[in-house]
Amino acid sequence: MLMEQEIFNFTVLIEQDEDGIYIAKVPDIPGCYTQGRSVEQVMERIKEAIQVCIEAEDKDNILPLKFVGVQQLEVKV
Image (cartoon, rainbow, N blue to C red; front, side, top):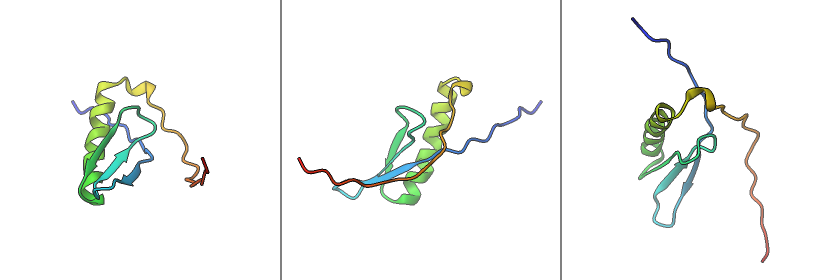
């Protein structure tokens, strides 16, 4: 018997650290992040991380937020 699969769409934030490593984070799933040496690698890894996080959580409690945009803000301190 085949189980029906659900399709989720998540926003993934990708940053690059000072060593050139890419870090991907999913704001909708707390603690869901990974890293890789290229954007392609980090996207494959974040897909796997999302699947693991969803399997560990109750799928009904994961509600992807609507992506609005990204802004950079300069702050003097």
